[in-house]
Length: 123
Image (tube, rainbow, N blue to C red; front, top):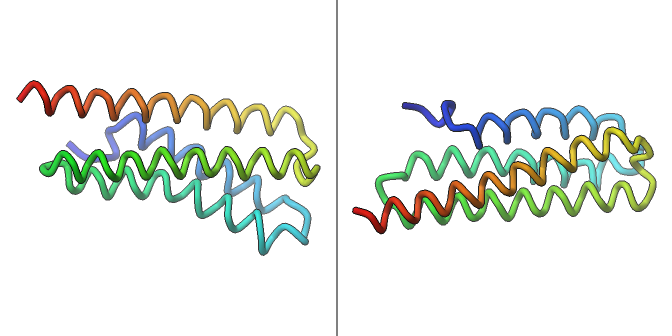
């Protein structure tokens, strides 16, 4: 099995690509601030899932990286909301779509962390 088979990684990958594409359309003045930050945080979600997966033999390490992924997802939501509140994103449909995907990913990450923790207790 590979991390690429994980539903959370697949979803994080899709969201990071969508965020990247959206960020390139932001106003020029945002390109060196929020645009870079939101790209970094969204890519951090998938990267931490991958790094945690590589350490899955050490459950506490695996969970730690999954929690970091969840924190990066929360950070991405905050950047997205900031961009919308400051009107750097004006497309309500795009905002709603990305926000919904990030919220769903956050829930899936939370459930996945709980499942890993339960599995560890059962062993």
